[in-house]
Image 1 (cartoon, rainbow, N blue to C red):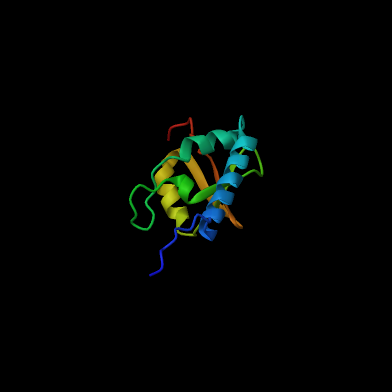
Image 2 (tube, rainbow, N blue to C red; image 1 turned 30 degrees about the horizontal axis):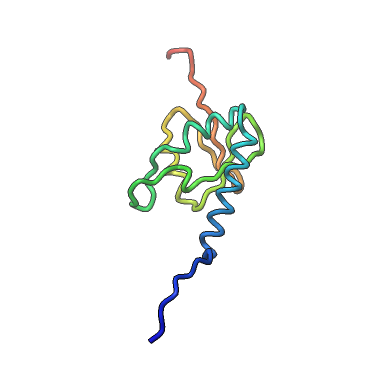
Length: 114
């Protein structure tokens, strides 16, 4: 009879998740005080409909990257995030796909009535 020993070693998936969290934290820190940082702070905890899973948040599927301070650049875990992200953040933001990034910027409201 052998005893089962619980492994305290970190699994590879846990190490990848920790590394991604560290990168996200560094990006958030470098974006502080910029438009991109403000947009990320506003949208990161919004609910998003992904794969019919409950309690999904934008920050679980998108990761900020510091490129330009006037727009928020995101890397996504899946291409399926784009339509869900557009639905989650509504008409207050413009969501664009450019190369490998999703670019989020504030929507410009027209002051003229037609």
